[in-house]
Image (tube, rainbow, N blue to C red; front, side, top):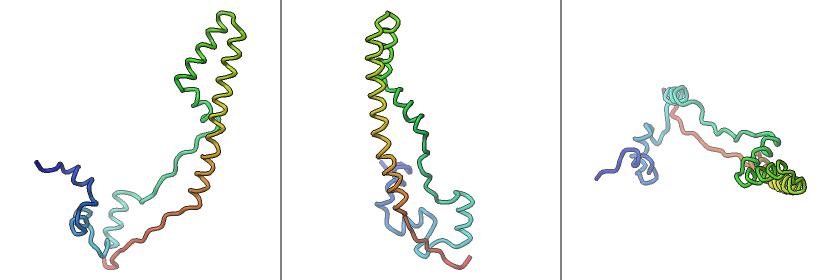
Length: 132
């Protein structure tokens, strides 16, 4: 049974250079300026978009979406509703300390990752024929 086209296209590393160049519509000399301009218009620039940064408060609030935190907050609300103020404050304090601790631990690695990403730049070379 022959492989599906999508499956064979995903295994580009198994193709010969000639077959790969044919599949990409290129050759070893590169693209002509006209073909490069056409592909730029068709596909857009070859850019890697950075991850969107979220505000610290939004990162903090996102931690409250954890199911365990929701259960604990519901237990805290139930304690407050039944008049058990001590349990309400204890559970609420534990949840707040836990979420704050998790959020503060995530700030450092995020900053370090951003510093590393700003230091490391990827470079590549493009081969193009000068004829149109």
